[in-house]
Image 1 (cartoon, one colour):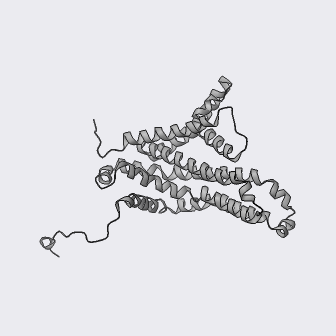
Image 2: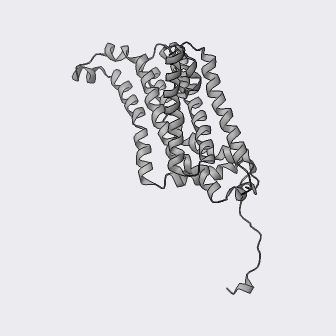
Length: 286
């Protein structure tokens, strides 16, 4: 067809409802993440703690199989509380690594290529943009954290019977509240770093620094002051204490749990402020 024969035609296809348009951002970001076979293989490995948990719960209720390997039902049952607490930690750690791998490319690429104006020039505001990016991490992290944890809890409650699930409701609450809190904190923090640090290796280094270097600095403050005041800047200690308080287990330090919640909330608020400052439809370069 000759160029002069091309005329403007109105788009006649279906339109995505306004409330679902941030899902378009999520859709393509997920497709880009799983375009890497290495990441897809790593993500499958992150499901391993859940698979092991399901197997151990099944094993603890299979008397004949326990006898064949020289264990007893009482031995497995005695590890129930500790087992669920350790399982939480082994699910939360891979979730952090998935966030570190995926998040640096979620916003940094858009800012580096001046694509924010294309996003925000459409019926999508900054809130919808951030929610669309956060949904990527939420959908990636949920199966390997709270969904897998609740699956194991429900399986244990079903196989054990006798009201086990009602008696141990704290386990289910810890998985639901603890993991979702961890996902929200890590998602906002990693997106904020991605918005401010465009170089992916530097962004990942900054994330590790915030988590682990601050944890070491907090321990030094605790040692010098002989208190637990340093835990106010220790994200891993804060989430650990919050989760253990829901489990009903022992916590570290002498800070009230309310202050641990404050640390997590302050991290979210600071991350939102950083995103608000950086995400703009235009940028002034001096």
